[in-house]
Length: 143
Image (cartoon, rainbow, N blue to C red):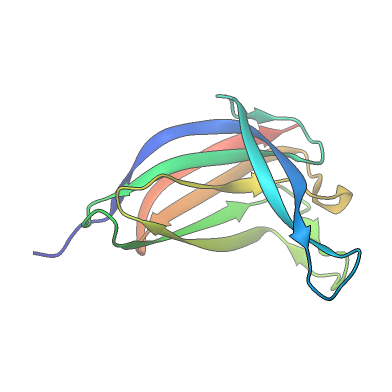
């Protein structure tokens, strides 16, 4: 019998992202790789429009054998006028991302504000799919 992908919503809300140095790149003095530390701050959909803040969704894919691969795909719908990529000049009103998760294991997805060009106030929407099956649509407001 084929499995029917779904997910369990663990929590969602305001998160803080902080880049920390992971280690120096061998053979490249002064250059480092970075990791992002994510801190869950509050169960709210009102997110401050500030660099390093964002909206995260913590979920556990269900419907398949625990530990097997679960493809998580989410589309972030951006309020008007959209985000203008500073390098290409292209304006995006939606951005789709994927994450290789696993059934039965918690995964975090979402959106973080990294730069001034992403600071768009208004109502944002995230549509989430698990293994190609629409699961949930969640909203947050950036202000």
